[in-house]
Length: 84
Length: 398
Image 1 (spheres, each protein chain N blue to C red):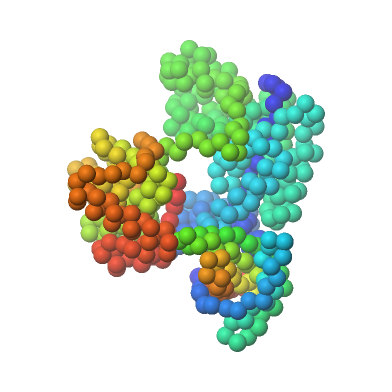
Image 2: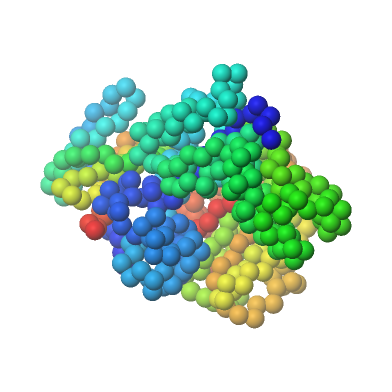
């Protein structure tokens, strides 16, 4: 009954920083490039003292959750949601 | 009833489920339930598609799956909901500075202005709804009235994505016929007591004699009478005003029911550590500890103990919990959930202890809190908790 897979792995992200906004355009995970077709939701959280920005994004009819740690400047692929 | 005020109650529709459907568009139009982690938690909320099957908040997952086998289950993500709530509040600040965050998905707004009467305020509120929808993709239902009590009743009249104005006409026509427990600020127990004396509907309460109400409820009877008549003069506070927090607590649903005192104590210690961290981060201490225990049959028991010294370290709170467990609690059935609350809160400055051992403990606690703040909760934890992994329980906050 699991609705998603937790990945929690580092990724490389192509991103536009503009007008104070973070706009990821694509990410590379395990050597494969995933173009971000749409950001469906964004939110932030704290991990310890670090602020983390989370993005739910769509690529090829799948939803991925990626996040950016403002303190370490690292991007991660957090989850991949199953399709329904 | 109309005092010139224009108050809005804004209630986000099926909030957690809608946020998840917005986050994952493939969930839209499908029966979705939002629950804690693990197989034993209850439903926090459900999408309207799930509600159509009769799925209700508080049901267990197996109960819900019996009714609707195709249910899609999503884990709660409080960071996501809190962040979205703050985003919505920031949108509302553009419309008025009198905003009261009533809960994670409800707000009161005072939009009173010389240029706006109650009857023609709907366009203004529709603008608010449109901006929220444009910025978050979420819908909300709004009640507009001359006070908070009626505005809250109004937001329930048309759901989802509704808007209703409550004036003297529809108060008499519709709201008087609603059960008393629909009144904001009137608890289940009071509603039960009212029903016992033949007062079932809001209208009955408004019509009841003051002597009957004060005989049963004392001074509170006067307030109940006013509530029944739709009268409420309480103000909507400014968004920068914070009401003083009266209690703080955490609870855990165990991954399995257990009566094992070692496991119960280990979880209790875990909760005390988390609570202590929060208290100390907010510069607070308390004098009363309340321990909540829910057994496998969902029967909930609450025990509390007050002390004459301030509590805010893990060991101080845990010590009182142990006393409660030893002196007050008789565990007859396996336990499903445990909660630790601290009340009678006071603000405290950093304390200096004269006794060396106190200072050592204090320094140790500060170091633990600093490390956990820096790297995340439970980075440093007591050895007795090493067998309990963080992802094996579900969390609630208050």
